Image (cartoon, rainbow, N blue to C red):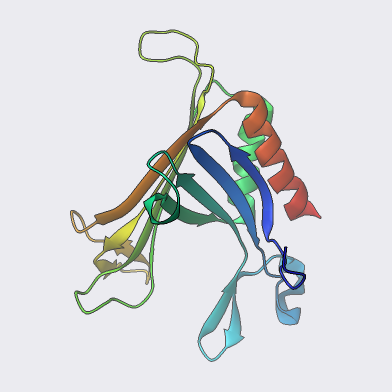
Length: 189
């Protein structure tokens, strides 16, 4: 390993065909907003805002490695990560967290980057049978037409989303607990 390389990986779960990893994208808040601890879209001057995130990456290497690997990634805030972990700790039977973000300047076709994330838990399948791997994580990466709403926010125009990559993974209770526990501990540290 290169001595100059520093891994930002907090934790990873691998199967024979897929993996999910969580990466450090945390930033401390600027001094003027020190009580935030983690940056929360804090103004850094010059129109630049700083965010604190946990990166979530899914990889599907069932078709092979190298350029055959399918990848998709999204970011969650520290609060969202700890919210998901709180549901793991509570032992919820059913859970469904969804997030869609559109960002960046539109390209020549008027489309911006879109990430969609879903974290769900279903303790039984459609036939009522218990599931060994009840946690489901899915990420879609693509593009869509950004539209500003009345309050200044941005959303993806209906039916404009074009998926470039979609990957999912199923995880058992213990392994999902380990992942989210490590992420939560890292955030707190």
